[in-house]
Image (cartoon, rainbow, N blue to C red; front, side, top):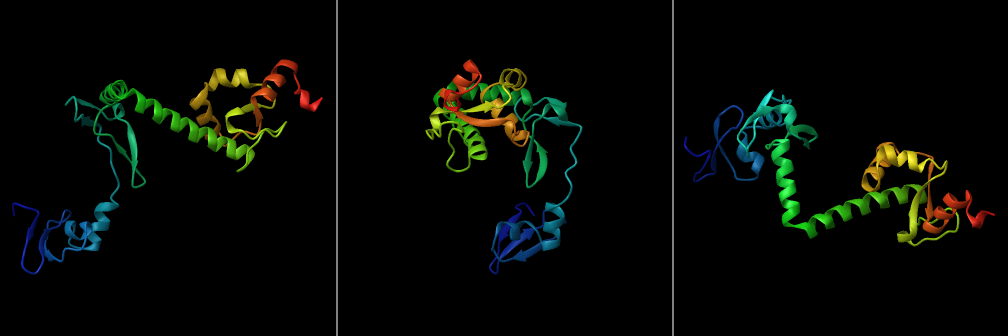
Length: 196
């Protein structure tokens, strides 16, 4: 049979993707047109993914080791990208060069979501400064209660890297929310003037 699906008066002739059996089916859905039975569908869908040792990149057409491909999650299972890490990075670099405003907007939105998630964790829905109750989101900062911020940021970085570190470590208890004034005063004088 040349085509996988061929129309018939009573329905569609379907060649099963798994067992190759040809059967007439009513056209009801994509799954119905790919498999002859529910058993074949479940066997094919839930078969374990065994990664090959080598893979040919769809972009550079070179055969490379499987560890030179990024892994993404599909239907709860890890799969390898169709292009290698080098080609993926080149594409990403070219795209950012071609659309710089869009790239900056995506980074800003991602950072905003991470920061907002952290603020909501430490301050609830209506987050505010722990010292002076300032609730303007743009003024709020994440403060280390034990004054270990410099050492922490040397290890984990600034901005989005620091935010990801906080989320990955299940929101450490040595952090709090302070406004910029209280945070600066705490670092300069050891204690915020509001608490003196």
